Image 1 (cartoon, one colour):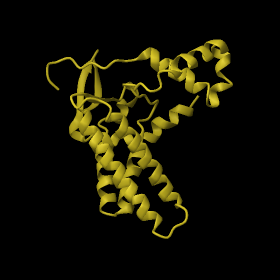
Image 2: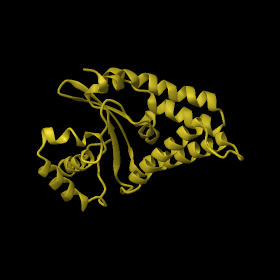
Image 3: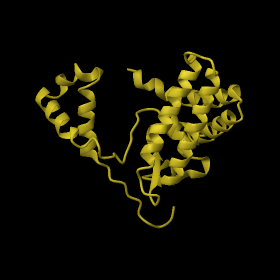
Image 4: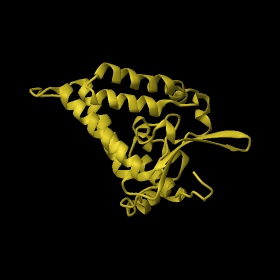
Length: 210
């Protein structure tokens, strides 16, 4: 990307505090007091509550990359570098370009969901519901990317766990799926998305392995 420093604020404290807040409100609420005193959990949740309007600069996901993230990149955005003798795999794109791709993808998927539902459908079919949920994911991601300066770069860092699936062709599969949806080829689009799921499923299974 050039001989200039690329920096992102890690926001480790704010992200950690938000994890406390999230854990106190989901299924981990019963287990959390076994690891952290309850008062500290309440204090952390209260401290972060006033900062919810401030954007987080980093999103993290364990074991798999959320499907919507691949819509922000193309295969040409792939950057491979070396660190401590290991290859580091990233996708890097201008934030405004990534946001535009994701928002366009959201519109394509939304249109496909409506077409699947049909004009007289009282309720969305299961397929249409899944498409609508995916469109919502894309929309939320696009809004988040849209909060950054056009001069910013957005980077998807695979981390060491995903080295085994490199080179990852998921961005190409996602682009194919969206183009096929635009062409109203639902079957071929589903096949392209299925390739992504099949590629990442071995890593997803590690999340529940002992």
